[in-house]
Image (cartoon, rainbow over all chains, first blue to last red):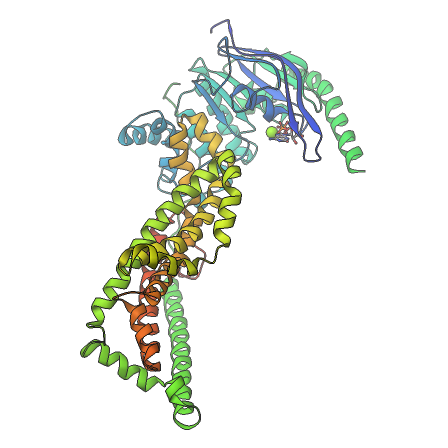
Length: 269
Length: 292
Ligand SMILES: Nc1ncnc2c1ncn2[C@@H]1O[C@H](COP(=O)(O)OP(=O)(O)OP(=O)(O)O)[C@@H](O)[C@H]1O
Ligand SMILES: [Mg+2]
């Protein structure tokens, strides 16, 4: 594991023009680092600015203030070696499963045959063997998520940004995918930033859980999760250490969730 | 990342549907189609017969003509030839003009539409000009084009071009604008260059919009070619209709209309085949599939 931070946000602020005409601050003064090979989970109330944070790291959105560094270099365009699995499905409806997964290698200059060979391996690995020729509209929501996962992983990113990747999956598939993600990650030195609503998922997967404040997002607290690896997601949930960490983080997160709820009801009123 | 593990999720076997169920559904489907066609034919027959009867007993067939006279004119055109020579030659000329105008207009419309759809600055600059150009009664341009380009093919191609261009342009523009940002962002992160985003995301996204416009556009191309010929030409179906009008030959006008309609329907069918091929990935809208 490399000790230098691969991702660094320094006092990053992101403002959007709100539809009402004012300015909406989605992320305020966010400072956070992720070391190479680390698995960091980000939790926070809905709408606080988690996806926005990822879009800053990926270079898709520039920060309004502050600096975003990836591998020590300031981000101006999409840094190489970044994989980003979006919150919404981003599979191409006009391409078959295999060609969807082959997109990344194709864009990066592989020949069609080579790209397809690599894609086939990943299609199999996410459990979609036999569905290579299907179009996305012929798949279930969970299957489409798996296509998106394979599409991102086939590029073998060093920095993997995942925005609630498993929230649409059924419980069984979800724990299979979680275990699989851990196995794949353990064999690589990729850094993962994993946004989720599910605190259990966050703790089961990550080395560190970052709790964000209600909107505008900034880091409220950061908790190390010292559970042993390799982990089995299903089993680790039952251990006492897990429950202890869970309570500790939930105390912190609950305040923010309640605050976000109050604000939302104020706005509605 | 290592390549050592595979997730195996239970995959539901695609159950094969009992073949008798399929056969039943197919035969029901066929029956329905037969009924639909029978009713259509009955409607056409009823219309033709009532026209023939009214034209024979009540109204003046000199102005309104009647089906049997139109049929006779069609037979004459295809066996003996027209006042302007072989009917096939007229069809060929008109078709050439329409297809050329269609191809050039569609190409220009697609390229410019996508370009402007993706460049906000360019779109903002060009918007008033395009709106103004679109507001011009374009059919009138046919007269201008005859002055500019003469009686030959060029003036008709130009008329067809302007009609097709705007129809395709606006759809391509809209299609390029409505591309899902999520898809574009995803492609960029996956490593696509700007050009690749355009070819692999924007163009396919806009394809269904563009194809929808092409259906109307070929009709416009034919109208453009015929109106151009009507205005001034040495050959073509429009000229044929024009001559028929000058000679108070109502059956000739109808016959010309029928020939043009058949051409338009054939083109429509060809475009549908193309559309089906290009949009294979889309969920079937129902109706064409056998329902089980
Ligand atoms: N492109 C944009 N334009 C304007 N406002 C935006 C834009 N993107 C995000 N926002 C606003 O920023 C805030 C944070 O959004 P973001 O998507 O980052 O939340 P989130 O934490 O990911 O929420 P969730 O957990 O529900 O996905 C929201 O209030 C949203 O309305
Ligand atoms: Mg989000």
